[in-house]
Length: 303
Length: 333
Image 1: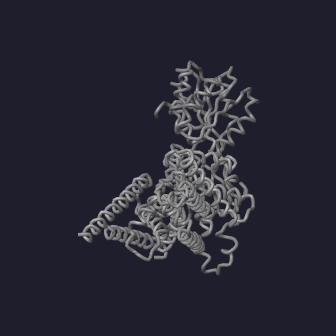
Image 2: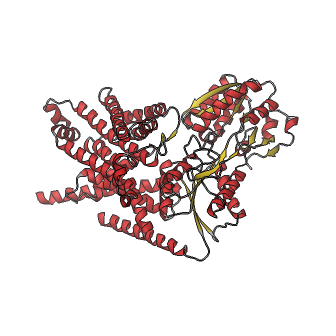
Image 3: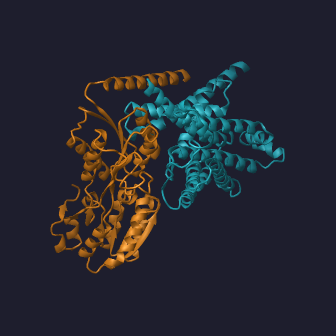
């Protein structure tokens, strides 16, 4: 039984950390309606920046902040490519993602894997070292939860501010922004910056948990993040008191749980990607079903 | 739909629970059984050979799967995130030892097992110090030890010189993101002048660039191409061979599997033996005959020459007299 709870905790840890990224992708994909592929590059960017800083003795909290800022800068590049150079959304994401590979290698000084075992991280130093002994075993889950909570509250707050409202209308109704004499392009760039900042932060936290950074760790992040957002918003759609940001985090946890269960049941790793695609498809299909249902309901009300 | 999903999830979780329950019940037998978790980073002939050798090494030391050990074998399929999760699940399942094949798998195992003080045995890690896995090769002191494979570049260069008396330039294709390749390149650049060679290296970042790189190495006048243990280049060996054959120059491999696939010759490390030694070390740690913190890392650099006769004839070369004892391997065997 304790093994079961242990495994559950593993899933929770991973789900929470990837949840930070899912919240970022929620902003770009759901709010801005921008399929942002640069995530594959900004996730390892966060990890590499963190590894380089912590390995040279920087404060881990500072490293998190630096990762967020670097991710934001990369996101802004995607936005600038799309808005100013009029490159399509998919392509500008691909361009940033490709460029990030080289940037990450420069940051890690040419090595593909940068370990920093036994250096202070957010999980071992500062606030985490104050934990009483019983809690220390579960500190990764606790710290990950706190990180998610902070990011979630900040995003929820931001989306309610005037700028946040402008951001929300940029995806739904860009003409409305133009009528307010606001440049929708600028708002889009800002949204992408925030989204990729969150992604890089997730990369940073995950790298601090495994105490190493791997420049190939970004592969498949877009799919994972999109699947998390779609699964989360589909399954928990009817739960009124949940904010969409929370749904994204829960989606990431559900997604990780599915993979973990499949692995434990002995599914060969070769089929994991196929399983990912199947889960993703199921979520997309369910999403469409729901919207159809709702449309029908609306129609009956009108009648 | 929501209900269906939740039913499926609930069913899956219950099944998982049942599976865990079954395993814990089995471990309460009289005879001591050890649980070993093995993570292999990718499917790759050398790495497969290591796992084969590892099982043999355990058998030699009296540990047999199904009798007194249970092995949970996982392949990360080249994705470190998979490896991390597998390692964490093994640590949570309280295995007695985790074995990691290749550097990324060893690193996943180490970071997951560190807290719970589960011993970690690695294999095929070229530079455990740089990977941060051990404090020193003699006394690891980190709860982590194993075997390290180091390419014997001196022997390789000597062999190339024996085959090609007049060669001046060795072409090398390497992947810039693979730490092993970068350090091997530095080494070979240092020692190449001793054998009268110049190194013409071209870096690539992914599989699609290998063909261009091979063509550019050939165009720069390389007299032969030499491979490292570079996963990307080895996986695209046929592309390299295609360019080299078109120019009529030989390719030297870094292990026997590449020679089987069409390289001329190689000073090859025996990966089955590497695995066997790793298995023996694991058995010592499990049975308490050795302390993981003081068990020194074993470095393998002894190599045996192998060559491909068909390729040699196609290039109209002769086997050098110093290498008459070299083992001939057949293509595709």
